Image (cartoon, rainbow, N blue to C red):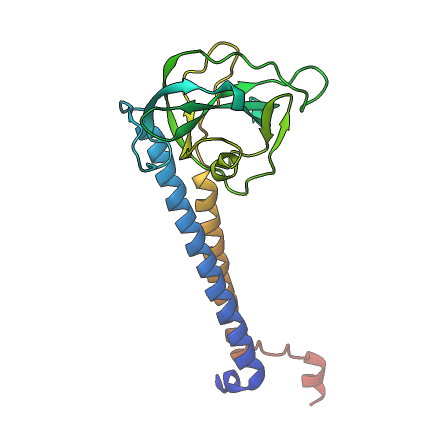
Length: 243
């Protein structure tokens, strides 16, 4: 009854369905991995807000670790990061190097400021950094990927992304391998909040891909069954009467 499955046509069909199902299962597994990664990141974000800050260690710690770092701001090499959105508005994040005596300089994201009137890239008014020795409390933010080109405008370094290694090339001292996002910005700044990652979107994709794989296999099984058990042809009563 099922010998037709050994024909080239059905063997090819079965192979195609099998490959498609395997690919969809693998895609579901990848999305499951992304869900686990993002959930772990969200847990670290939540946990870090509940613990006391630690002194910034020599080695770059996990992202979002709450730390303290002490030094003096170098406003001569202040960095404007354009095209950053906070509360639906596009402006600049202001990153100021904090020069330490006991380690490499740390880039500190002091907060967000709006552009001056005239457009999203108009040079903003940046609140002055405090002078003398300061202690910053914030979260470790790993260097952003795909660093953008770096230019200088009106005495300030300007870029699109905070790529620490790329920015270090513009600075006259060694730079720490991550930057610190200040959690208590000074007057004139808007805090750059840490957003949770949308892990549930990945969970939905997991179910979607696995469901597609199950439907592909089930659809193949149903097609095989219908091929093996064709419906009986309807009887023509007129033909029976003349037989």
